[in-house]
Length: 245
Ligand SMILES: Nc1ncnc2c1ncn2[C@@H]1O[C@H](COP(=O)(O)OP(=O)(O)O)[C@@H](O)[C@H]1O
Ligand SMILES: Cc1ncsc1CCOP(=O)(O)O
Ligand SMILES: [Mg+2]
Image (cartoon, rainbow, N blue to C red):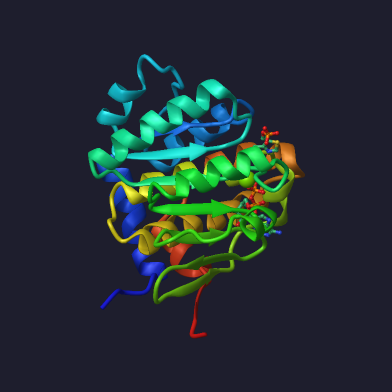
């Protein structure tokens, strides 16, 4: 029987990420490449970021997990994403899709839906994006927001951590996709991995908010907290709720 995520499993998986230092490749929008890479590094992973057609096959072959983010999408990145996903699938590597702004553009929505037919491990978006995405097959569904809702074939989990300043910093959702990929690299159960990743980011945000004055100082304090968050912080602050319905 599948197990349910807990504060203990989140803390254990964070230790695993820090110990194993998984490699995560990010096909990331141009706005938050630096912030996403910094978040992955701070939590203990090793990011790579190229979108070059010549290099993508080699890079995906070298990493442990892949993040596909559809922000600032263009024709060249669509081509590279298709190659990356083919390599990840052929090599059995976990990958996550973030269908950024698919609710703004029919063309981007169609591309997101095309990717979903290729069996991503996880689809994560905000409420507006997840409202239009439709059927995601057997992928783990994550809708982030004031509460993060995670749903697979038998488990429904809410993570009630985080801070409103996360919504005032561009790219916290994109960064969460990178951190989730780092956790998927060390834990095959996508629900346990993603719940741990979102608990760690949410608890880190709460710790950061104690030292910040607004979104600007919060952004730096959040990266600091991803680096220093520890088992005690997680055990005392994690709010992981199991839903029966
Ligand atoms: N009001 C809030 N309170 C707590 N956490 C939040 C809040 N709004 C967003 N978050 C957190 O910020 C991150 C990004 O979520 P969201 O804003 O839904 O994504 P996106 O950046 O893709 O729009 C998630 O980790 C989520 O938990
Ligand atoms: C990550 C992010 N957050 C706000 S704008 C942005 C980039 C999204 O790119 P696009 O405008 O092409 O959706
Ligand atoms: Mg987003």
